Structure formats: structure tokens, C-alpha cells
Length: 480
Image (cartoon, one colour):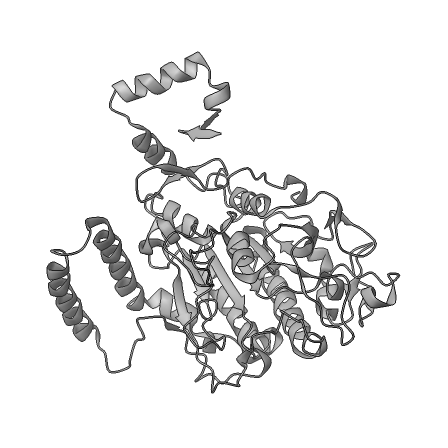
């Protein structure tokens, strides 16, 4: 469906003569398709349920059978080592290692039936964060490519430029914390997993990434308390040293301009244009009081920081709340696989019980309560999920392999029905019995919550109109 100036109209097989004349007339009047699309894009975020999105991404694939779709009556080699506990949602069997989430389950809905057929981390991670299938690079690999689809956050950032007199221009519309996905994973080459970048939309719409280092190769800051010195949330590529004054920064900007003048002689115009825009935004952000204050979690009470958890995921989730409070529209918080496994629990479930579930339980439950206490939950969509689930049949040490056929997602805020279970699964948590939800459906739902028509098209680098979602539908049953 092509949405022109806010009016949806089917093209190709069901286009009407009237619509064809209207489109042709617009062309005669000098309003080309790109200009029509530009006019359409000038009206995003109409009647939104949510002003912003916090996306908690548990990369590696949390097990449905150890989290929100437990099957205590399944055979011994399927049901898992954990027991379900009571919660505020009738019929929801939630893990004993998620007691805080159980206590606030009336604030969130569980989609039990997320599903896709991209049964690997990079492809699945790209699919979940963009709503489009990943085109595997020629020769293979796991890294981002310039041909990747833009993430939902990048699309939001692109559409944000069409908002006139935006009061939040000092804050990046799209932020990823604490690192780009893959940065702390141990590989022989630098790894950056696909899905979170702007891809073919251009670098200007990449997220504002922060950078947090680990102490050494064996360190996992997600599994321990982090000091305030560690939690400095430097902007990736623009680490701001204390000895760099605003005057020196201005002189650096002048030097960059001289270098760019030379670069323009050799580089493609569009690439330079995107780079200029990226550099300008980054320089504005690094000197913005609103940005620096949002990352300064020292301003939060110690008691609240303890409730989130002093580990990297907990404190980054708190930063996400501060960022949306400051005006960010889309914030992704990565719970990455630092050791190469973590949520990707092939070997055993010990880490799931000791670190992963407690960390998620603490951060997610506190975020929902904190947003609610501040009056922000009604205008913030919270999504917590991985890119896949785990195989119903476990190995002898209770490790499970990849299973993208079925996995859960937690959604809350922005008018989501609290205490709702969406979709039914079979007796082994292997397949959806009703209401399967695809990554396209998820993306359409998120865009819908933000007041973005899922039928909207954006222009790629060749100025061709491309749909932000191809075939998905918003899951309206989730909303009140």
C-alpha cells in the first residue's frame, strides 16, 4: 500500500483510474513521486500512543522454556530445570528466577509466539531490529554491511528530521547503549553485528553509540557491579577528554572543514553529504548539556541505581530511561554475549540461573515501575526480547541450541494491555498454535505505537521509495 499525503492507496493490481489520474496530475504539476514522499514524510508521529521506545535486546536467544513459556508437564528432557512461580497474570507460567517481573506482570504483556526462519544470530538480530530479512554478504560473515536494511531506530531518526520546531533537537533521536552489538565479544577481528545501523539509508542515520570497555579479555561487566569511573558512556568515535575545551573543539571543527574541502575533490557527493551531516550532529551532541546530563547517572539516587542493578545492563537500562526523559525517541540497550555464549546457552543453564535471568529480572521490573512512578510508562513503549528462542529438547547439561521458530517478547507501556498473554504455543513450546507474530508484525506494531504509518515509504540512496515494513501488520490486540 502506498501512503501519499496520509491517504493509503493500493498500487499495481488494484489501482483505480481516479488514483492514476491523481498521480499523473501531480506529476504534471511538478510534484514528482520523491516530492510526494517527502511531503508525506513531513507528517510522522501523528496521534502516537508512545513518544519513545526502549528496546531491551537480549542478544543470543533467551530460552522460552526458562523464561515466560514454561512447560512443567512436558517430558523430562524438555521442561527444563527451573520451576514456575505465581504472578499477577492469570495463566502465565513464569520462571522462578524472574520473581520481580512476576510481581509486576500486570504492567506488561507477553507475546509467546514470535517466530521467523532465520536461525542464526546475525540474520535473526538484523531481522528483529529492522523488520526485514538480512542479505547475507557474499562470502559469508557476521558484520554489518552498507546494504543492510535500516534499523527501526534509524527510520525513526530519518523521519524525525521532518518534525518542524522539534523541541528535542539537542538529543539524538536514536541512541544505542552501552556499546554497538558485538564490540565486547571475543573475536580475532572486530565484530559489529548487523541490525542496529542505518545501512543503505546512510551514516547520518546511524545511532549515537556509546562505548564502555571491559577490564580484560575474560571480564564480563554484565555479571558484576561496575564502578562510576567505568560507567562514563563515551560517545563512540568522539570520546571527549577533559582537556578539550569548547574553543579547541571549534578549532578542530575548522580543521575538519579544511580536510573535508580536500576530500570533496575525490569522494562521491552523497557520501560526503552524509558524512558532513553525521559530523555536524556529533559535534553538536558532544557539546550539548542535555546529552551529557542524560548520560550522567551519578545524578540518580543510590537506592534507585541499586534497584536497577549496578551491572552494565542494569545501569544502561537506567540510562535509557534518562535518555527518553531527555527527548530521545528510540533507545536500544544491548545485553550482549561477552563470552561468546551467555544468552546463547548451548552448553548449560548455570549462567542463565546465576546471572542472565537475575540481571534481566532486576532491570526490566525496575524500569517499568520507575517509568510508571514518573508518569512516563503511558508514553513509552518498552520491548524486551532476543532474536530467537532455544530448542525444546535440551542436552544432558540443560544447554539448548538455536530455535527461531518460537520465542517470547515482553511489551509494556504506551497503552499495552498489562497482564495479557498473546498467542498460544504447543505442549513443548516448539510451535505457535495461534497468532504467530513475525518480525514484520513486530516492526509494524512499534511504528504504529509511535504514530508512524507502517505503509510509509522512505527514499533510499538512489531516491527510490522503499517501504519501512513489507507485509507486516500491527498487533492491535495488544493495545487498550
